[in-house]
Length: 508
Ligand code: GAP
Image (cartoon, rainbow, N blue to C red; front, side, top):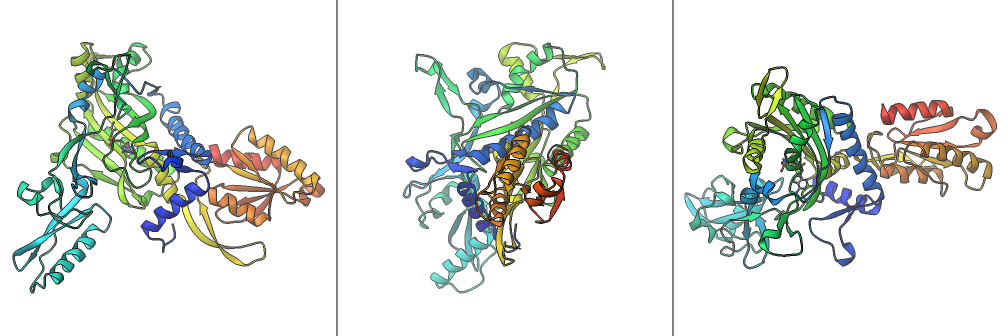
């Protein structure tokens, strides 16, 4: 990120680059787009897969205490009654009757404008990074327009959910700037409904899962019964989740169809859950750093006790400095035995486990690290986006856009270039090397255009290494030029050294 790039322009730059280079497209674009849905193009799907693979390798394959699962998106509707989603999974919504726009009431803020103790009106604003500043300016403007003399009180913004009924008529709609058109907040159900089977009656109502977690709880018994696990152990799942978000926004940060990487980590009810929770927070932070996020961009938001869900003992969110502000990336919650006990009650099946070490039977408690794939991808893109200046082929300094992806998750690992495309002897060696590397990694072959331009094209999609086959390769010692994306430094390496180096950088 350049020091000068504002957050707004950074988001615009990322969205533009994603479309231009085939990372992410608005869904159904040829029909004008579909709000809250995104498609991943050739490079996006590689990046996404690499993130998921890194997570799966580090949390499932490299750990002896976590097993994998892939459960269905549509499950028995009773699961969502037991989990509390049918009755409780909703967001407060407010409508503007005039503009027909809809807001999340907890993302709409208002404040009275008070001059010398007299309330002269209200300001309202949709949540944004500089909302305090914007609200203060709006209040000062109101005072000026109404020609009020005296001291303007400090503007204290509150969520619209905290507005009193008598204030609804007085708070202006952010869309029109006029009071009187906002409704009172109403609960809006976030689960998408569908019908299963030939009869479209109420009994056929089913839901697209809003989290993958319940598929884990519903299969907990199966995994325990296969006898592979003993307390403490986890079950991990990667999969799509769907939420009819009232205000999907900030690109892929909040969408209606997204993917989660979730773990339910089952522990003894008498375990030191506070220490285990802390260990999970640290492990998750380290993992984010391992895929290239800067440690200083990650912070912790500890939910205050009075704001915890009734079943939660503690929740800490790992926050990331996204272009639109510091926001939740990874939720790490201690969910007690709430979910398993709910399923035990609703299904009539015992959810107890026999703890061989403690020689006792109990329903375990759970720690839940829950991460969004799309949010991780946006964090990775935000951290990687860089603008700098480098000399071109003729030595003239020019602006360059690059994505500084870690080689571990970069969509294309290396690009192979013959120095000249009209020299068959260079092309032959380059193609042979390309085919060899392609068997192990996603690599790219490019013979067209000046070499500097070819480097730039790869820099912009975050390819960490450029490999050029030149006359020294074919006439002297067989070495190739290896170029580093970030420093632009070049060195000659043999083919064996090259493969060892790539192996270390990508998989090491
Ligand atoms: N099982 C717990 C659970 O689903 P959550 O905080 O609602 O908790 C977990 O979601 C993670 O899923 C979030 O931290 C975020 O990374 C991702 N996520 C949630 N809603 C999302 C949305 N609408 N769009 C993209 N990612 C979302």
